[in-house]
Image (cartoon, rainbow, N blue to C red; front, side, top):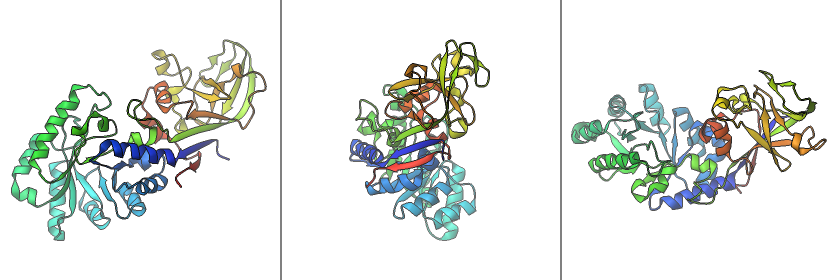
Length: 371
């Protein structure tokens, strides 16, 4: 029996996609399904998005693209990681995957492969407008656009960039990146363009371009002021033991000292399951700057984590629920309607992206909705 249950609500996922697609109009909305659909499973997420009319997908690695291709045979699938060798280029062509070219070296590899193959296969061009991560510089992109021989050797179907601060609506970087991207966009007329991620969808229509790329918004719901949130994930952990402990006793690694007589519930979940150790109640560096640690929700009340989260087990203080209220096999909600993933992430000093993509394979996964 699994120690925890991960419930994935496909109706919520589909509703989030519809809302993001509507907010993106007249641009199309793609689905970002890298990292195994943010940890939820491409095998369930991709068909649900296809059923809602999603025809464009973004993944990080070629292997992820192959998995999506099996699930969405007619889709455009963009691979963000770029090219590594001629062998990888051949894999893209054979599997009808579209490489995102992130450098002049990528351009050279893909151009040479297409010339040898005698066919200009589609590709996307990534331009760095302020992320300082992947992508051609704006100057490199503009120079490339002016070089007719190199430009015409490629079949560029999308020009894209990535926003660095879209989750801060008033951040000046957003406008600077838009202005830089528009310069590049004008150098590649009649080609689709993409700039907005989930948060970028709500920066305004100028950011939508031809194609938006929602990712996290599909899985955790939309900003409160954008549309009603529809969380896709509920995570529960099974109680495997309930025990009484006296004031002054130590709990878990590091022996966190109890300040009252307590009832403790030991749950079968730990950092091996993606329940991050940084969210421990005590004994980790984060508690020195952020007093409140992680917790769960059980029988109508919040129950805090006591001591350190360990590899396989976490201890919760259920004293306030009263004697005999908590039983072995009860399930503590770790993420869900009463435990928003944003709050869970904050307690661990991180973001919902890391929480989702860290979810382990030991949970029993249950799919609801989607019919």
